Length: 279
Ligand SMILES: C[S@@+](CC[C@H](N)C(=O)[O-])C[C@H]1O[C@@H](n2cnc3c(N)ncnc32)[C@H](O)[C@@H]1O
Image 1: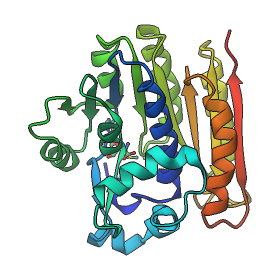
Image 2 (image 1 turned 60 degrees about the vertical axis):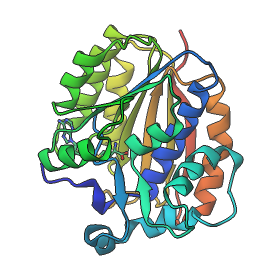
Image 3 (image 1 turned 90 degrees about the vertical axis):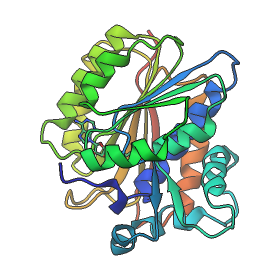
């Protein structure tokens, strides 16, 4: 386990992923009944962009660095950028909310957050970040075990985030299998699966594997900032969203092009399509 998210926190891939997650959470808040968020690959929760690893890569400069303090590119980015602003009340960008802090910022009193992180140091940091927060529990197990152990949640409503580091060559296959098993336990949950856009054939194989699970109502959202003419760099960021909130597809078709225009790019673009429509 060599991957540490601090090197990448707030980069364009994080911005795309977190902006969409914030929108999903915002929509979940439309109903007063409680929901549960299960973050199966949680990371440390909050990232110091002035720390040595973040300063080494400076990846955030082409991501949140382009949005923070600038005019809002699209109103649907508001929940995400509000959460970032809340962590930086003096107006200088230092702290970046990972998916746990983002979820915590957008939850209500009645909602619950389950965080899972396997790396021992990151798990420890995450535990300290949320110590004493009674709405949050922190676990340390394999992500796919965490899905088995926590689904379905008692709230019967909510979001599952599957966001692995792609260190293992079979990660795409594990994700598809993990989704299938989780969906069997909890067919009505919202699932968000993040994937890197590097090598397009690998993405196609993953999407085909997800289609072959037989699950319906799967939205695909992608944002690329480089043309896909090499697989040696990260060209873009993708999400598959199972059971997306009503009209999320329409909002993403407007929001992602505005986000693409606000981020530096050498090409690429955005795509929002149903991988599998509602049955
Ligand atoms: C991409 S990062 C997560 C970022 C986080 N979701 C966010 O958006 O802020 C992936 C995390 O998964 C952890 N991880 C790696 N393998 C895992 C496994 N099998 N089960 C659970 N967590 C794992 C890594 O240590 C890393 O912190």
